[in-house]
Length: 97
Image (tube, rainbow, N blue to C red):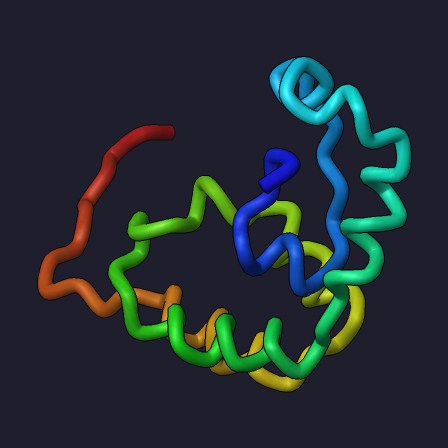
């Protein structure tokens, strides 16, 4: 809705896109509508529940939301970032100088 995913909506992130202007041109108060969707508690629930998904599951869709949630200091962000660290069984040796 209005170019935002649910996590962005709970953090009241407004992204203006040309497609939205075509579809929602009749509503001049889109920013105010998105601001009313702010719900920090729900954002924390969403972040807490997506942390166990794979590394690239939704990362490219929620960049702005992750940045804003980090700036707001939301509690589940530390667990989310910890879950992004991946253990690997191999190591790369390089002789590049």
